[in-house]
View (cartoon, helix red, strand yellow):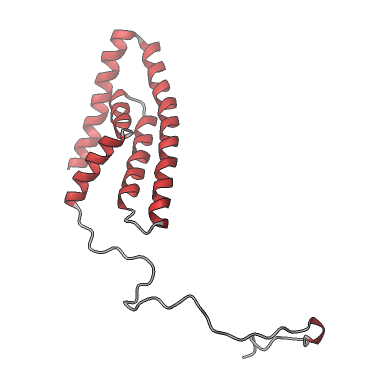
Length: 156
């Protein structure tokens, strides 16, 4: 029901804002503002998206919890969708999501409602991971002495 109300109220808000702003500044300026915010928003979303991707990559490489960079990336992606949607209300929300402190407040509110039980990296069997060292012997074969035919590994 909440989703239905959201899909009902957002277009109504947008229509009302279009009528109000269009009545004050005219149709041409209204359309120009909508197109300009989409172009400007796309550039900002691209740069912040790349930064969020680098933060996520860094947290994975350092074996840190990737939850926050993932959430920021998702909010940046959502803001891009809002900025490409024509309208003043969606643009305002989209630009608000591009402000890191706003995303941090939203992330902190979401974190209070969602609990992560466990995060594991690497080996999952409960045993400590084995060493990377493999003790083995090898023999260098002369290419001239290579037998013809199958290697023996594929025989049934």
